[in-house]
Length: 294
Image (cartoon, rainbow, N blue to C red; front, side, top):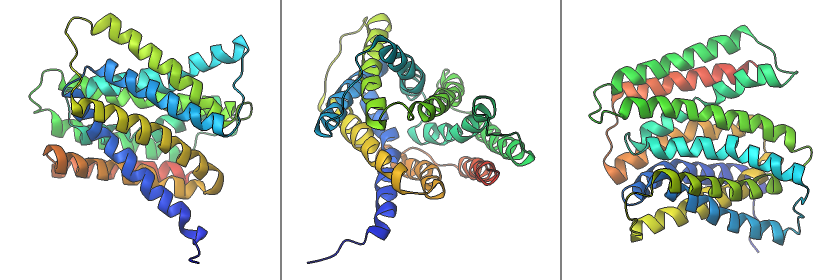
């Protein structure tokens, strides 16, 4: 029988995760062509909850029933998922999917800044300051390249995307601490439910003026993002966290945005400008400096 080389398994999983997460940006854009952002995101997280919940049951994990845990899950869901994804979905109505991915790539800078304040072991170093400065100079370069965008809300959408990783970064730090108390699958399953509910509430409040039409592409977007982009991706990510070094994990940060640009260009014909690519490379340089300062 053919033997599976487990030495290369982490690289295969990283490649799969990179392909999945890089494609989610363009699939979000496809879904937004027929569905409003909060409704599309809400269905995504509710379906992802069902998938991940089934996986948790298969693992025979027990969900906490105490009020304190559920209040924590609600707060965690708002910070780590609801705020960030509500912003991303809203913003992608007005800017390209690849551009959204590149701007979201500043998340490691937020993690570094929040870690200094919230994690006692983290310290301010000259390399971290230099890395953050370099990274945001790449953001400025991208903004200067995209000022010609035709939609009047595009500049606000770009600014919003830069804010959304701050919520995910804070959620990452909170989740890192909470993993001492909760199993990683449990830590994400119930927050997916609460995120879906909160996004549906946003839909009811802000998107109830026009009738909703569920097209084949809209339904495909929801299923793809829920099953592949959230549930399966999380399971792979959890496995990777236990078996892979931080250096290998960081590869995803560098691979995803270029692939997202490629997906946007191939599927939606989105433009890739030299200045956008240069800005992305500058951001990557800043991320590399921050990571090496640890």
